[in-house]
Structures are given as structure tokens and as C-alpha cells.
Image (cartoon, rainbow, N blue to C red):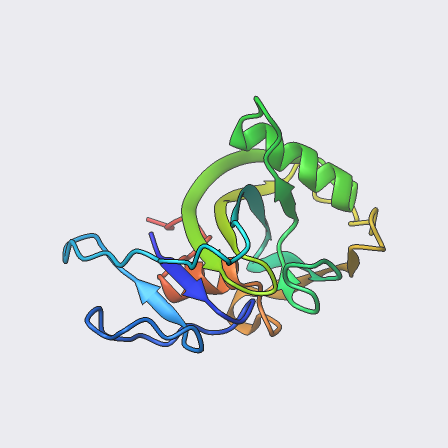
Length: 188
């Protein structure tokens, strides 16, 4: 699982040494895992209190393509993202995936499963800790067409070849891809 802190929303992270002094103008990748090293973000008491957001994003597969749309929201404005949104109280990740895909695209999905979790912290425009659960699913009926159900939040939905994704990508998806995410099941 990757953990990133960014002073610019949705920018590519640049690795820095865990021994450097914190510089608010730099982007950091925080690591743990086998190395066991973590860096803690220290914010001044005058800084806005960060919020914690948990969301679900759905890699909806059709052949070697995934469904994506360009966002018109505070987080990720102008960036390409997967269908998805905030996890509601008491909702499972799977329930959230079904609901968000239906609300945003009008599509019915099936075979929903968890792929990975991405953990990001963004400092500007307001401090936010974002946890995204990335799910994989397929269309319940392959003849369905995506409809832009929320035009105020998204330009529209299109299928993109996994090897030729549009840019810029939403930070959570970009982080997962940089971490080796492959949404296609192995064909053993």
C-alpha cells in the first residue's frame, strides 16, 4: 500500500529521503512495509484541521478497457477518474461500488471484488487524508451504455485502453498504478 503526502493536489510524488527535513513545497512518498520506516506529518496548530475521507473507486472492465471520466470536483478537478465516491455510514465496500457506479453512470455491475487500498494525504487547498478502496467489476449486461448521470461532477464516461490511459489521472489511481496495479485477472 502506498502512502503519499502532497502539497499540490494530484501531482506526481517525488521520492525524498526519510532523513530530510519536512519542506511544505515538496511532495513526499512515505513508506513502510519491509523497510519499516514511516514519517509522520506534523502540522502547525494554526493549520486547518485535516479531514478523513474514505471512498471506493471501481475499475469497471470491458475487454482490455476501463471506464473513466474527467472530474469537475474540488478534489481532482480536470483529472481522469474511475466511477466511485464516498463510503456511506454502515455501507460495505461492495455496496458502495454498486451504488456509486449506478448513481454516476446508470450501469449495473457484477463480480465486484477488492483489488487494493491507496492511502493519500493532501495538504492544499485544505488538508485531507484520503483512503481509496479500489475495486474491480464487470458490466452485468455487456450491452449497457454509460450515461453521465452527474454532469456537474463529470464531463462524461468513456472506455480507455489500459495501456493508453488519458492524463492527468486522479492521484489515487496514479498511486495505485505506480505501485504495480493491474486490474486484469491472470490468465493461467
